[in-house]
Image (tube, rainbow over all chains, first blue to last red):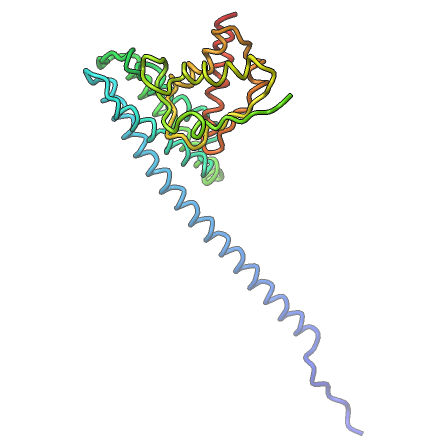
Length: 155
Length: 108
């Protein structure tokens, strides 16, 4: 009577196949995850770059507003809207650790000399203009700090 | 104690103005006198919703809320009675809280 020959593959071959597929799946998962993180990081970087540009432009517009010889009502409304848009964007995407940087920026522009009855044209070395520049820089630093802490912590 | 809701954009204006009545309509002073003080004079607490308006100036916020402390109300009572809600820009709540506390400290 001839010996029985089994057609089923040996157990070590099955284990090898299983391990191979596990490695393939784990590799795919890691690459996909890293790819998603890289794309998200790029999107956030672009968003921050656009925000920094807008913050710079708002600071310039605010400086012009405070240096004008007469109160600019439309200018004041536009500044409030633009600051709110920046604040919403920062909040929506959690782009700063502490929202006080947003409010200090708003306050530097709209806290003093922002109402028609109190408006006085500012000279180049005024405290209000210096404060706008300072708080603009602080807000940009807050954006960069959060970005670096989140995406470049291990570098 | 009943709870009221003030939605600034719906109940007051979508375009908050400046600090004083003399700065034009919808000033911080007007908001304080017409909305905040009547609430504090009664027993109700109140949620104030900031979302929906087209931008706040700090002078409006300072006059509306810091002005309450200057009018004799305690910051702690104001913070207890008012629930400040700003989902789209939480920095507004930080700012108002700072005005309340710093005006309180100034007044001793």
